[in-house]
Image (cartoon, rainbow, N blue to C red; front, side, top):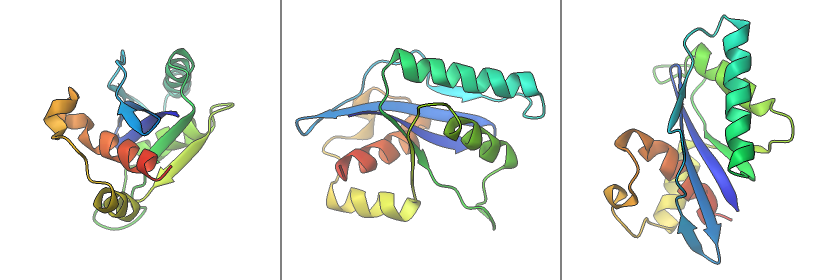
Length: 141
């Protein structure tokens, strides 16, 4: 299974591609690590974000998108731009989208701890949350 794990922060969609085959995880190279939404009120930019994200999923033959859930209220609530980006991803034709809560991620990481240090993955530090989301998701499959 090949997935694209996504962490949405303010106006950014940070991504990490992961595959799991025969119990082995792999992190394929990817041309993008994040997508930035400059103006979520501009229809053209929202369409461009959706089209660019869809093209990446097609090019890398992604089976599923996994998005890290964010709070809708309170101190740690996600931004409105982030929720618009989430909706744009969910509405991409033919794309399966799942969500993982922080609690589910913690539970999965407890049962299936990462066998290596994150720095050894070759990913950038800002991709760590997206990576753990994808790793936790694939560990449950």
